[in-house]
Length: 483
Ligand code: ZN
Ligand code: MN
Image (cartoon, helix red, strand yellow):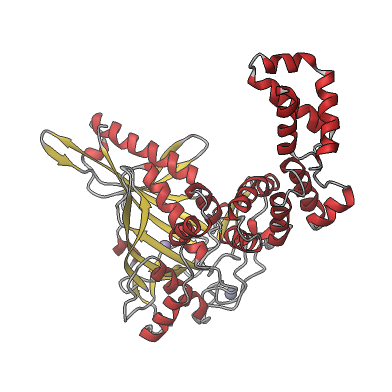
């Protein structure tokens, strides 16, 4: 390792409100026909005045509380002035020196083992811009997204590897989804990362820390991974080659091109004075009362890290399974309901949910909110297996059937006659037939070949159409073969 990576991340996430930040237009812009969710306020027409969205402010403060932030007693909105075709007012209403949240942290798994706290410098509320659509004949602008509430969360430069940067974004995503603050729809542009990257190293006995690059608007974990890796190496190579980074005093802003796998220069210098921030004259200052802050704190649900620990302790499942289940609140709740309904079989329920169920969701590209069966279906199936009514093999077929039809597993088993056969006399007949038909496997087994017994069990199961109780089959085969 020739240099140390220093990474800080600014995350923009859209808040899960029904309406926009300063007007009554719907905030559900994704997929809507262009320029249908607009009004004089979010189009920036002259004379239109902003009215703050109470729910957005509550969600922003709640996010800060979930991230262990302080809620300052005095806050305000400011204008951030710049010209761009997707910003109709010529300024963005944001927060400058008095944001809603300061001085927080979140915990991530550290590179060297254990955990590490990443500082949250601030989290402020602002409005999203419109969206430019570039085509062959020119560019068009869609203002449906204009004015959607946006929370900007600024981390301290506390991450020292790509892995830690990814762990941070993952932890942040979980916390915001869990507390109902944002759906964190990366794939739809509802969450974006600006990633500050710099390198630090020893040279001639001195620590050298050249100015950083800010990689703008990364919209996937893969983009973070590739762009940070590329830019750090580029800075290092540029330094070694005596390039511009040696004389530069401020940071640069770069973009990321996934197609070429390279960053490209956007702006050389961008200081806050360039934005001529000043207090938003159309809005009053806001002093969140201590009572309202405490009420929001009390409304916070159990956070993912606590829930994982509780799942391991309460249900006796592995840390890995707990991680998979807790990664999505809808999936975790589904599991808890199924585990409660299948009392004493929480581990078996975890196997079904993390196995068959999750595999099907992924195949169909469904979110856990769209699971087509109820937790009681899974619980009932687990009880059927536990009581010996159906075999594990048959249970998979029953699962497939109930997934497709929504039928109760008991009904499927009864209708298709899938009850497991544990009756020894019925199984003994099949065992005798298999032994008589396959003297070679019998001889192999007697010669000590372990696979021979499994093959014979498989043949008996085949004869019984998968419905024989495998323990009874194994027992009877063992008895016959050792006789
Ligand atoms: Zn509007
Ligand atoms: Mn911002």
